Amino acid sequence: MDSGIEEAGALATAAAAAREIDPAAARDSVHGGPCANCGAALAGAYCSACGQKAHLHRSVFHAIEEFLHGILHFDSKLWHTLPLLAVRPGKLTRDYVMGRRARYIAPVALFLLTIFTMFLVFGFLPTPALEGTDLQMSGKDRQAAAVAIGEELTGLEANLAQARAKQAADPASDALRQEVVRLETAQSLAKAAKQRLEGGGTAASPADVVGAISGAARTGGLTLDVGSEDLNAKVRRALSDPEFMFYKMKQKGYKLSFLLVPMSLPWMILLFAWKRDVKTYDHVVFLLYSISFMSMLVILTTLLAAVFELPRQVYAFLLLVVPVLHMFAQLKEGYALGWFSAAWRTIVVSSFALVTLTVYFMGILLLGMLD
Image (tube, rainbow, N blue to C red):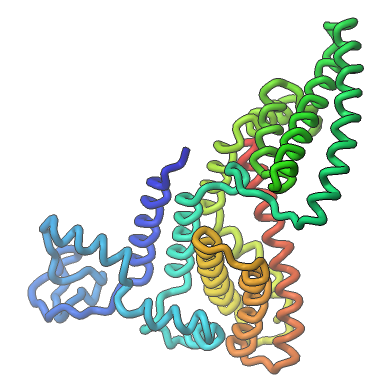
């Protein structure tokens, strides 16, 4: 459904916005005369009063060049910022907080670029739950599952026969109709699982589960009660078209990603409440650079999973171990902490980050279903 064109446009927008937030250092030749914007006398490549460039181009070629430059380069700052962000995030944070900023990309600009790039990657890659990606299962588990599913299928067929007989006797009953649909959905899932196991495959595919849920939502066989008929209808409508729901979740995800900073800020303030030399601004810089790195890590892991079939331990290391090590390094050097102070704060920050992400993704899920 989503070709990724909108995400590509969003990336271009983010790059342009980031470039305006974090403009390049002046390298043009000195110009004289009045500034075209404010009229002040020019004595360099930029106006000293309003900051506009002294020499302005009016060619289509230059407009294209600026567009591509804004997306791909960020001048030389990118190559000073990214290596430090990866291996010495604490130094990057400390340098920026203490005013040594000229060589680095501003944290807000980097945050914008990495967040939009991450959702661009998500936009081009298929949604696993909507594809036929199998759930992994060992040979012994497959045999045990085959026996269990066979027994379950026998029971489902007997219950379904009874429910259909009752429905034939009372065709006007909504409860019986919903019960028949529920049993038919369970039967179709069990049959699909049995066929996969008999063919030497795995027990189920996420697509089977998603398809069964969406089918039940479309036929009215999905029983929901969230306290409001209007909400029930919205949830059923979302589940009947899961592809569109996931699309809306991706859109909401990158548009509201900035909320991760104010959601995380109280935890950081609380952890350093007794340190008078630490300001709220320091925490904002820490969070923006930290989230930027985590976004880059998710991009890397997603691309690796799409191209290579690596052991699960590799992905677990990238998504669970590396973030904790990165936070430790950033806290220790960024706030000039000792090993123990950085270690216990890393544990607390990691726990709070998990809570924050859970609340954030639950909110995105609800918005995707109810909007």
